[in-house]
Image (cartoon, rainbow, N blue to C red):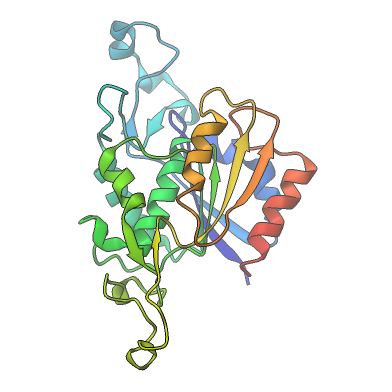
Length: 258
């Protein structure tokens, strides 16, 4: 049996560049998982160009394909709403339904935040009109690398709302009245509710990350309390660590779902 993992790149990356950046990760899982990489739908300004005029006039067509920068949404501290999010989500739903099924999801930075949201929405598809009726089971797991809690208030509320514990892994069987496994057990089983994500997760956090500080990544952990999240800390910065201990940690985590 081989698992299938959907991989979501970070802001200003794309599927080509992310495939190259995760070569060691992919090799660590070569015997147990196939990785499928997708590119976000939004081209974003090249961050190395310093002025708005340069960014407006940048010649993306002159870039190599792996250098063209994409993002899952845009936002700012002044405007934390995620512009372009719904289009990205619609694209991911299409990938899930046409290229799936996937056992898990892995994401880096902005892609890690998107992966976490997608994991939650597959468990609670009624939260988003874009995901309602999606024909894909919830993920068994997510690998969140330099992830962070959403700043968009709507998306954050998805994590902080109270939900019944899922008794079925089929999205079409899930609704807010599904509290106990069956009617006859209702008197013997106390209703159980959770906040946030019910599925399993592994969170990779760089102690030296100055782009997504460790504290921001740790804020996301509190939304993964039903199944204790696996945490992998490393002393580096904003990247997926590739040393022997990290490779073994990735493999052990993923292998547990075979």
